[in-house]
Image (cartoon, rainbow, N blue to C red; front, side, top):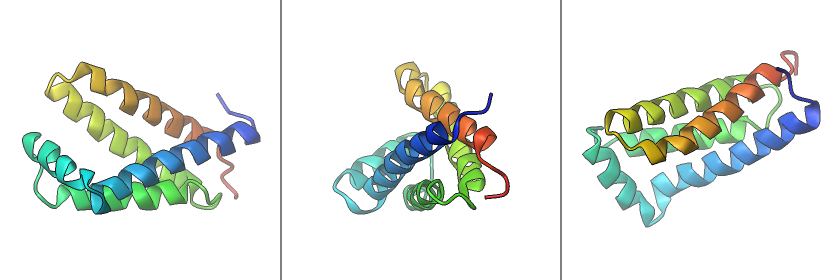
Length: 117
């Protein structure tokens, strides 16, 4: 299923906003401590918060650039697959909703983004 151009831009903008805001929250806000604790509880190393945060910011911004949109959409989808797997392993079923929705939107952006732009 391919989305119309306006729908692709809308999805990309929403995803960009979400991922940049969440990525920044992992790096430079008071919630960064909470992210550190949550990631530690899930068994991730201490540096995971920074790595994931940077990936989310860069991929989120990349969604707004037509030339990088497909790579950014794949990256966001991969991050959401990781989040989905984590929540599944730890039986946090209600927390699986956001990664499913965001990952699906990112996948639609990937499929619909023009390969030449």
